[in-house]
Image (cartoon, rainbow, N blue to C red):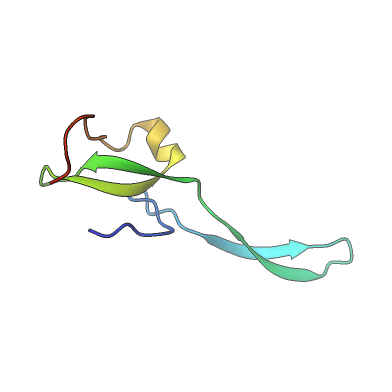
Length: 73
């Protein structure tokens, strides 16, 4: 499984798009990126995989981290 660059593994949160607005109301495009961290997790088949997870999901305990000292298969 490849690491998706800009999506949370748990909640699928991704990059949001919008405009910067100046005092003159000029619009320039901008992005909001989620705070993604790489985490080693146990997937459904019991294998260890490195995935990107947003910090909100990490704090809420929505993923099961892989134990330390166990090598990825």
